[in-house]
Image (cartoon, rainbow, N blue to C red; front, side, top):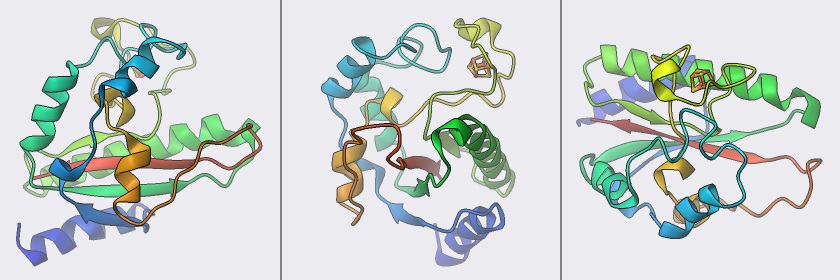
Length: 180
Ligand code: SF4
């Protein structure tokens, strides 16, 4: 990708209101089996959200997918709203990021694919089965669903991400837009 093309992609992000992002090499991101195990044991969305494990590729397949891209945009979404506003915040940002992916795709990057920052919550209650999804064109998995160790990965790019101890602490969210 030349620099003009890269600038075109970041312009689309900026127009959607996302200003904190940087280009990364997907092969440098950390993929770990423990991330999948955390999905399987301890997350109430496991098997219940149609965009979450087990409705995703295996961990080796996720690793292989990232190898098929030479560039991606790591997008930082600091969440500055109180706990009772976070669902709406997630919903709006998911919609905006999916629209960014669509615009990047239409600008000539046929492989554009979004790994989102939060479990799909476009519906009040997920149908669980991917084949029943109400918005299949907008359904996207998270970075974590693709076994990316977000903590270790974002540190490589200068971000600090720590475990939040209670819901009052403002979460930092990250999404990854694979572009090629
Ligand atoms: S769009 Fe709705 S049904 Fe589909 S994965 Fe998201 S929450 Fe579930």
